[in-house]
Length: 140
Image (tube, rainbow, N blue to C red; front, side, top):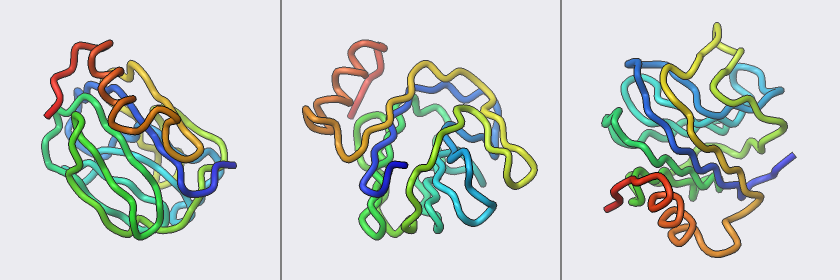
């Protein structure tokens, strides 16, 4: 179990348009979970409550630092939102699928998922830059 603060970094390519999950807590009920997804036309982090990032589905480097009222979503290396995503930890992981709420599959490619208990040891922006360089992603 990763209590908050935890960090999820993913390299993705979304093919579909809505309700697609990158990372979901394995054991979470519909309202008791921790997941990063593209839903209702926006990037979303949910850990008991939702915060929404941009409506841009072509983002490739998606990062969420889950820290209760200080949760952030970063897209292609820049922060797009901060707010209260709730207090749920991360108890086991499903990649590309969330069973709750009728099943949400990732429609597209998932190239990389990193989950950190806390922040990356070499710093968040440094780690994002390393990943962006490795995957040829342009960052802000």
